[in-house]
Amino acid sequence: MEGSTVPLILTLGEKETERLGMDCGVFVRAVCGESRTYGNEGVRVYTLRVVVGPTHPICSMIYGSTGATHFDQLAKILTGYEITGARSSGIFMGILSIAVGSLFKITAVPFHMWAPDIYEGSPTPVTAFLSIAPKISISANISRLSIYGSYGATLQQIFFFCSIASMILGALAAMAQTKVKRLLAYSSIGHVGYIRTGFSCGTIEGIQSLLIGIFIYASMTIDAFAIVSALRQTRVKYIADLGALAKTNPISAITFSITMFSYIGIPPLAGFCSKFYLFFAALGCGAYLLAIVGVLTSVIGRWAAGRLPRVSKFWGPKAVLRAPDT
Image (cartoon, rainbow, N blue to C red; front, top):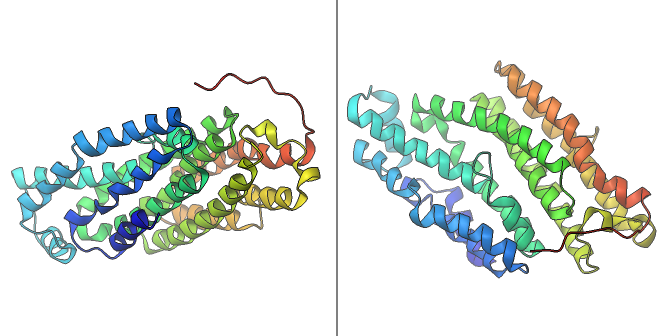
């Protein structure tokens, strides 16, 4: 795992655009998945994007148009001068490709397709790593939007619409899930939408709320997947398998319930504070649509993710008809 962690740590302080892709090897960890069907399908989707996708070649258009790769140099060029014509198009395509690559790695809609399968097919510790580490790394780098000058506004618009789409799809898709890890995967997609709200604001308050949100999200996710990892030893795979967990393992049931209540934003837990700061920042910058969609999807998410603590505390063990895994 350290082979995947080091590149992510290095990208946190990186100041050269061509090195932002050092974390591509992170997702290779998924090939050691315990379920080859799901894991390999997700790996194929990711490999297709990395190997034959246009993101990295198009990123070179920034260098071709400006002659600079260092963030400080780009900030001076893009902020101090008016760039038009072919150079402007090249810079725009390069910045757009950075946005697409970043959204893909953090499982934001519409680049989320690989996440449910690879989360389901990978060992739980790897799934937890994939759901946390790339988001921290990408958040640290994309928070430097100011270096892109007027082009930063374009990125904010992209994040604005992706935030709305991620919140809606994450909440609705989670309602239809019957497996624990797939439900957590779609909940993670929804939380990406909430976190992107901080970027969409384009204000100091938005970045501050984003940092708070990513820290709280990481803490909740570590706790949730730690419990899931322990339960997987007893072959808990489906939501219905959590029945009577309060009787067989009350400490895990209480901890899991508190974590999921925080996930769905029940006050006064940390998850509620995270969403409060993010929505407050959205209202402060006039992004009322983001705040409204966020509140509505949070209500829907309370029913979807709230099934886990509800089942673990109140349902008894029972037979469940399951479709065979393919």
